[in-house]
Length: 113
Length: 111
Image 1: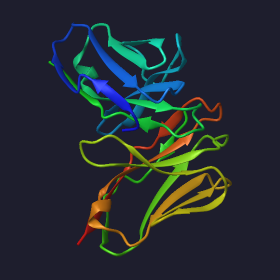
Image 2 (image 1 turned 90 degrees about the horizontal axis):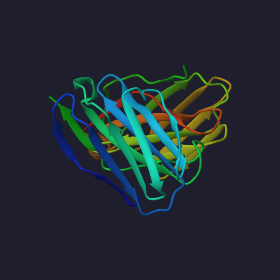
Image 3 (image 1 turned 60 degrees about the horizontal axis):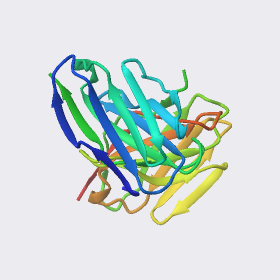
């Protein structure tokens, strides 16, 4: 998985609780991305980062926030989890912008009850 | 809204046949295109990238790009049961910052 880890790999949480997912890379790539994947919707971009402290919104950013204080770590926070945020979350990294290849982490399966 | 369209399948082919997977995209400014393979329960794995019109070959895989028709395809020669997976097509947006993914085509290769 190209030196990318995600934690936790599985999580069950209750509606209304905050949740933070972590993506860690050892490739020193500048760009990092958070996607969610749901049946019938495919992969959808939540947020991405183009450098330390530089982030931007993706297609489905409502209800999510991100932070990147170090090159190697990109955090995704669900401020108050809802059942609609039950999904598989993937982190991806890229050496340069969207015109270059992205490599994916192993994913986090999140269930909100 | 930028879109990448793929037939959801499943596309069923016998072992040893050629599998042809197709994708169309809406952003005429897209310049870079990617094919990912995703096994059930696993993360997407990059298998091909293509940036210029024409064909690009890598082993049993050939990617084809036609920017005028906004069409990308992936051919898998001598298909194997291990090729059974969902194949995702992705297009870089014209600003080069993000990718838009199709929903994927499921390929089933029968022995």
